[in-house]
Length: 375
Ligand SMILES: Cc1ncc(COP(=O)(O)O)c(C=O)c1O
Image (tube, rainbow, N blue to C red):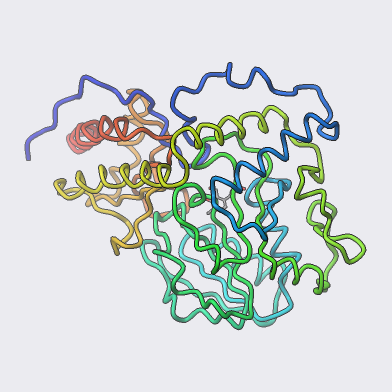
């Protein structure tokens, strides 16, 4: 095998982390100069900024008008924990676990909530569980995109449209990058620091009318801490869905989230965001095709993520030294696989990543592979 030469050009932006993710193209701190620092988020103008995050997010994501969208504490984990604790227990539950985050939700359901009627539909890294085995007379919890395996559900067609249970979807590495089947979903969560490159802070929680109905009619058998509570006196806490956050948000992060959303609009909206991610996946797929020592971790091409692009190596032990070398060279940061995943590389291809930067990274991967093989 010919040794790949050291490339002359580094990617313009070497940030390929899977959260926090690259800032949007052209970002500079000046973009946050209008942040309402030192102001109370309960005052009119700052509250309007929070509401603006909600309204712009809804519009870009083409969320149905009858859904509620709120800003909640503790990022995506906060949003997911809130709904697991608030909604589950009314029916049996199926949890799809095909990488570490789904495994985490399964763990919560089994070991923390200790729901007696819970099933885990599990699959090893690289595969999806049998989607046909999910029972929609029960509640079904799943990640749309498994960030640590690079495996995504292909669409929402496997979800019953006449379901009686609720579907609870962790979409943190899918929202703004993949078409979410709103008519098949009841709860959708995400964070700011993924596809639009925002700063980590509060999470986003979207609820269908059926999810709201469950909230109003179901009393969990366990106590709920204040930051998990979505209802009060049998009514929805409406303020959460207008920007009146349960606890204090960072107005700097709010400003940054707005900057990302405005960029998303100027980039052309959801279709263009998806196209940018798919172009990144395609660039890597073309390279994988011609490169003998690498393959996708996701076995089925229809399930390959266009955001968290996970690769396995013929010699897995080379992945960590490759990632370390590329980091020292300033060519790519944080591209080793997630700690719980099989050894490999993970390259973020979300909407803020330029395809030109992915293209510029590929010869560096060839070079680094040659270097660590020689050692
Ligand atoms: C699928 C998935 N769920 C949950 C999380 C946790 O998100 P956060 O750190 O925003 O709480 C992540 C983070 O990468 C994720 O990828």
